[in-house]
Image (tube, rainbow, N blue to C red; front, side, top):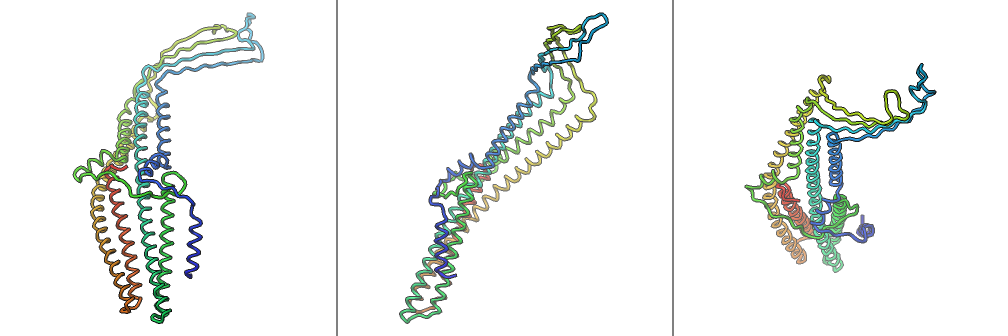
Length: 419
């Protein structure tokens, strides 16, 4: 592919980009992720669902009022031997029934468990928000790194272009040769490819950020992020266990499962309810007046139900053990995340320092190679090799810088200080 073709391709790609690209700060990205991301929206609806389940569980412990109306038509009046009408052909009846649960321990515990389940759903929402914010924060940092890679690639392209122009001018003046010019042109083409690839990676990162925050359009990073302070190493694990959203959600789920199992004994208790019913019958019958009422106390004591309550208790026991195992695993993972995050941050910062020294040395070597080539002491293979090494070293420095930022974000999220 020629230089002209690459230039046309770059022009077409630039024309395809949106005319305006919204730049957002790190804090704004986190705020949008907490409010608009798919996971947080779903988690919010789960909270609403849990609130609805709480209302269903509560209903069994509260009074109920039911009105019933019946219109009956028989083929004919039902007449006794004495000539009295026992049941008229057309009948209208109605009733108003009030049921008041007096002693319903199982339903009371269901009400309490529903409230606890709602608390667990709220904790799960916080965990979902945490995950969304971390993903959005990482995407934001990835954009910063991608923009730095684009800058490095563009600087390398300008260096390669200057070298190519010098080689062509030198050959035109009778001091160079065609081979040096072709080598310089090839290096310029490679730099153009690097620029386009880095721009493609940047575009993908912007699209990913837009999706993560629920905006539907690509977003750009406005600048360096502002992150909370680092925790103390001796307090980091305790902070993680107390502040992390996933730990709190696992702890809430384990508590609900444990209480549900522990309260299974209430299924063996009797229930007592009061019923009152107002009656209307037109025309009245021999046994039913036109207006009347009745009241009842209903005591229920289930004796045999085919092993239902035993099976329910076993299921709840298994769920409680599963939730506790998940909590233990989450706590172990949190402690491991903290230890690994501290180690990763230390290594990432050491790598960044080394990469910075390497980039400085590569730039100095490139300057020396250019000076030697212009003085005629070396051929342009030395220059091309120095250009590639300088570009690779600068890219490595950008990658190391991004690694240090990501490690810092991982440490903050591992201890619960972010978001």
